[in-house]
Amino acid sequence: MIEYYGLSPIEYELMEFFWKSDHSFTFGEIMFHFSEREGKNWKKQTLHTHLTHLIQKHVLTAEIFEKNSKKYKRSSTKEEYIQRWTIDLLNKTFDGSVSAFVRAATCGGNKLSRKDYVELKSLFDEI
Image 1: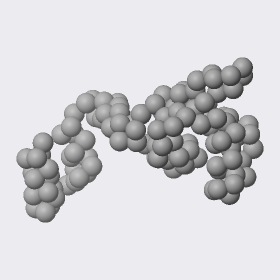
Image 2 (image 1 turned 90 degrees about the vertical axis):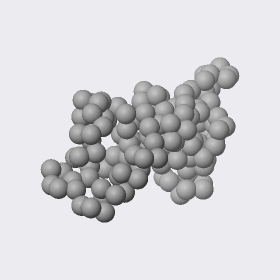
Image 3 (image 1 turned 135 degrees about the horizontal axis):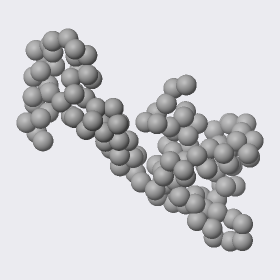
């Protein structure tokens, strides 16, 4: 299954909705948006399951605002989430080594091209 920064395609689609706004939404508002505006034919249980997974992944929060009713809101911006996910990937996969990550991502054990070297050098000079 394809993942987007550790999110399933549906989770990522849901988060794109939340990342575009700083508002909180009720379950009904989310369901309406995706069924009426996006043409999704999701069952309530499907949506609820994905929202629960997003809460477990700490990208979404849920606040009770009325008896048995919740409002859902993003817990961070898209940029903050991607940064957190990338740092986690770096730590888990490359023991926190930026150079090992860059080496694997850019040349995979082969010699780095001159063009890539110049681009990376320029990037690191900016930092």
